[in-house]
Image (cartoon, rainbow, N blue to C red; front, side, top):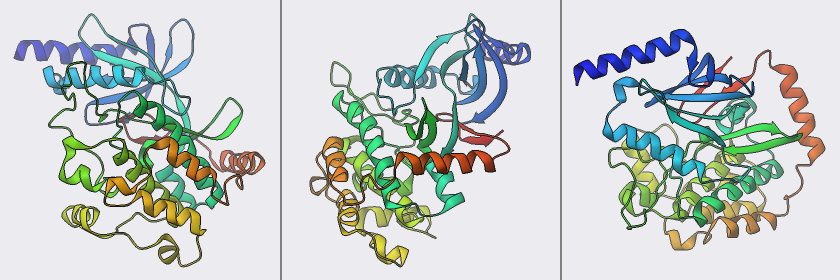
Amino acid sequence: MRVANRLQRAAWKAALKAKQLGQYALDDKIGEGEFGAVYRAHHALMRRPVAVKLLHTEKLNLASSVRFEREVQLTSRLSHPNTITVYDYGRTAEGIFYYAMEYLQGLTLNQLVKQYGAQPEGRVIAILRQVCGSLAEAHTIGLVHRDIKPANIFLTQRGGVADFVKVLDFGLVKSLDAEGVELTMAEATLGTPLYMSPEAVEHPNAVDARSDLYSLGAVGYFLVTGQPLFEWLTLGEVLMHQVKDMPMLPSKRLGKPVSPDLEELLMRCLAKNPAARPANARELDEALSRCQNNGDWTREMAEEWWRKFSGSQNDKTVVTPSAGTKTK
């Protein structure tokens, strides 16, 4: 085993030194997560820019290999335009696992609020509705994301459309195989505490699609107020509040009025009882479409925002699933 591990580490180092992984030429490292590193790369023949994720050799065991393959296989089943696209997956002759996905430029919702503060309600609604589209497809085929949070929702420009959303990182997704056996890794982190539903805290193996809606409600709360549900708490305190306590109304947290229909809808998503939340992502999307400020964030406004954003950035911010962010 030790000999095999040494050989795999040597293969990893040789591939990185050669800047070549199968049919992909590797450029700069753009991120690193628990299980792998991500590189900006391009296809040797097509020259299309991609992000390539490699599994760390020190993490290479049966469990991590299964998780890595499962992550890409589940994500590859999703085709909604607001979901990250996986182009390719494979293993080199040396045993290095990798997959190639679209290369994104823009910023996460976490970065958006950190840099620009609370967002206009019309923009919040437009963003949440796009996430609903991604989740609706996943939920329809029996997949629950389980880690919806601002850092996993990316804002970019795509095909001439400004403020285009991409939902990232389906690595913790929950599914059932044909035999009804749960595929979620038992040792996996089951989400980010500030955006975890009460049932994800108490019964992580029993969550359904409504858990994602709780998390999306918490994202909406963050966008509207510029603050997470609960602040300045230890991990244990955050988890306790998620289970027992409703957050302050967004209008009180923000210190100014929030449209009653949007505020009520966000608080419905944050209900402790899953049955009190919207039944599914499509229902939430329809409710958002009826909010009075739906449509207030126009195409022209989005394009103007991105012109200013692009002009203020000397470099681009790049993000990739399961790898964090890095400004290039």
